[in-house]
Structures are given as structure tokens and as C-alpha cells.
Image (cartoon, rainbow, N blue to C red; front, side, top):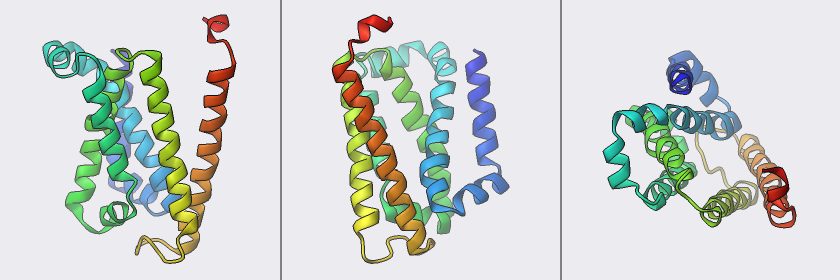
Length: 185
């Protein structure tokens, strides 16, 4: 239960207006730090919801696939440059970000994770890797400014940050494939 408190404290810290505006002022921090931290806060708070609503999670996310699909949809939505841009200009979109990432992405991901087989977990890794590869291609390859509220140099920085993350994910996937995991259990 301590984890849920840590998740709530992290969530409250991230939604404080000075913290939110600071994290959103730099594009790479907005996309590669604030958004994952919001998912992690929901990930940490999941145990509270599982104890409070056990039948809901059993009925709604019995095998983990619906929660995983919800996570994939929400995560993909927030990687669209136009949506990131609207977060800074439309208050309702920003409120939706602070609700959807922790509660519609983080909570379902954690609830689904224990229910998935190793193949399902590998599918999640491959999905996240492909998203980062596509973001690399989009942000580095674009000749035009994709987000009106950020400079081109920030857009390229996000692209190279996505490239670094995708390389790390590919190395991790190779490690999963070539290293016998039973030695470490």
C-alpha cells in the first residue's frame, strides 16, 4: 500500500502548476519525462484500485489484453505531435492528459502486466520500441515544424532522444532473446 501513496505523491507533484509548466516548457522533458512519470504514478497507484475494486478488474481485464490495448491506444494518442501542441494551448486537453496517462494507461498496464505471458510482455516491448522508432523518423525526418509551441531544434532533440530510447529498447530485446533468463530467476 506504500506504493500507492508514493504514486499519489508523485501524481500530486506532477500536477502542481509550476512543475507542470516547467516540464512542459521543454519539448523533450514534456514527452520523455513528464508523460512517462504520469504513467508511472498510475502504475504505482494501481494496487489501491485493485484492492478497492477487485471485481471490476477481474471482470474487465481478466486476461490482461483489454488493459494492454487501452494502454497502447492512450500511449499512441499522446505521441501525436498535434496533441502535444494542444496540451499547451487548450486547458481541457491538458486536464485529459493528467487523467488519461495515469488512470487509463498506467493503471491498466500494471493490472495487465501480471496477467500476461512472456509473449505478451515481449509484444509490449516491441510496441514501445516501434513507437520510439516511428517518433525518431517523424521528428528527425520532418522538414517542417510539427509543434507550433516548440522550436525546430527542440523537435530534432526529441527525435534524437527517441532514437536513443529505441536503441536501448532494441538492445534490451536482443538481450531477452539471446540470454537465458532462467539463470537469473
